[in-house]
Each structure stands twice: as structure tokens, then as C-alpha cells.
Image 1 (tube, rainbow, N blue to C red):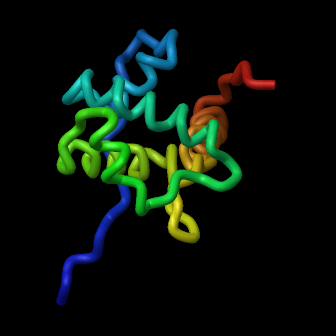
Image 2 (image 1 turned 60 degrees about the vertical axis):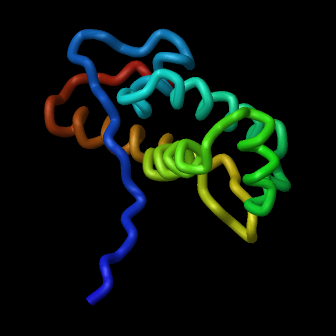
Image 3 (image 1 turned 120 degrees about the horizontal axis):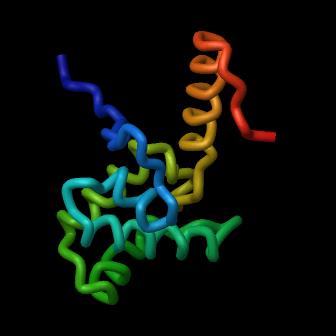
Length: 122
């Protein structure tokens, strides 16, 4: 049976240290490569700019050439962003996703119900 593609990534949580900047947030997703974290942030900001149309999948080559990024690094970046729930592919284009936010919200709900602690989100 063929292996099913999984859309997931590891998010680095550091006890007692919360990310204070957007750069640190991306470094938590791309903890193996700060360079890739920076590239992912730049790509993500471009996606925000391009909404609601998104970034056409067919323009990947243009992006890699402009950013001087290898094809492998580009796809590693996409997989990390998609696995974390930052982006999703719809109708032939990459779009910003609410998946990451939904994951965090659900974790807050579960943790507060388990511990009885109040969250500060309002």
C-alpha cells in the first residue's frame, strides 16, 4: 500500500521562553535552519500581500530564482509552512491558512480545561 503524504511539522516549544518576535515564531517552525526560517517569513509575508488571489503554484521557479533558493529548500519551506498550518494550497495557488491559529486555540482550550488556569486571550 502506498504511503500517505502527511502534512505535519515539528514546532519547537521552549519551556519558560515564549517567542517575542515574528522571527522567533518562524524559528520555532524552522528550528533546524535559521536561513530557511527567514525565507519562510519572507514568503509568508508575500502570501499575505497576495491574498485573496494567493501565490500561483506555477510561479515557484520565478520565486526560487529571485530569492536564489534551491528547489529542495523551496519545497522544504513549503512543507514546513503547510505542516505547521501557516499555508494551504487551494485552486492552484498557495494561501495563508487559519490552521495554525486553530491548532493553538484548541491547545489553549484543552490546557485550560485540564488545569483550570485562565488564559489571557480575550
